[in-house]
Length: 403
Picture 1 (spheres, one colour):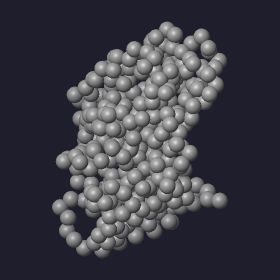
Picture 2: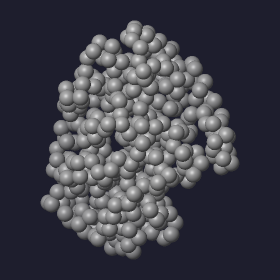
Picture 3: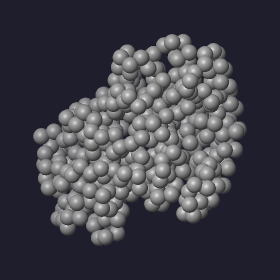
Picture 4: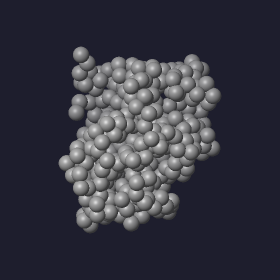
């Protein structure tokens, strides 16, 4: 039995940090820029900021924060579609909590709820199906959101709804896929990524084989990583070791959870219910081919996009918002011109400030902020988190501390 404290041991964290520093020092070559390692998953971003892992690394290595937070890449147009569905009088609109705060062009789902729409937070699609059973006179829509991690539970809920004949349940599908996203990042001329920390939760479902193209065609090393501080540090060491040895392979640090072949039952459910969309819009990244899924024709009775009139309007992000540049790793969160001023977790302008896995929200909560450039509101918020920041920095100095 492995307890979580074993993966947060400060002494082991310090030992791993020393090994990383020695490894980088042993590369023995001058670089005009730091080695850039992208953590694809928002869960890793949260761990990195929460435990001060960047501060444990040498200056020659830095993290680039990728687009692996599904709430963070939710485009404004899809939020507007959600609001339009939620405002229908016959509809109970259900969603995960983070999605309620993502701003659309008019309002968020949370504001729609305040204005009278029947919007309810649920913890799983099964909760939404239970609502449909209990309210046969209402149309219950579940907002399906997430990468391959959450697709199986959505697919299995749709299969159960069909088996039980619950016809007042439907899915508004915004599920997205990780592989085309990574490919789009690798094809971007703006980036110089040296390696990847692969997403642990997604890999539980799809396995490690789908990442082979990263090593084979793009000649970049990738290590599928767990989410505890020692997981992230060991995964960084594994990626950097590949770079030092001139190797480009797919390695699996998260072997205690991630099987190489993935989860066959989960993949079968996804395949039965969903098919790829030709293209799909991402907030800050634009349209990415074959990066989203929709429901197959056989399940059209449970497809909210077929069942109801959905506006499906493409809406540009606010000009001041630089979420796209942060998502692609072109700038750091604090380099956005509205970070901590017009955009805070209490009043987010961009979606990266909404979710706890968003790079901007994590940076805001766990990194020290220069209050001289934030204005009165931002300085006050920064002051409210000063104690947390000090604790986080103390943990960083002592290694990955206990929580």
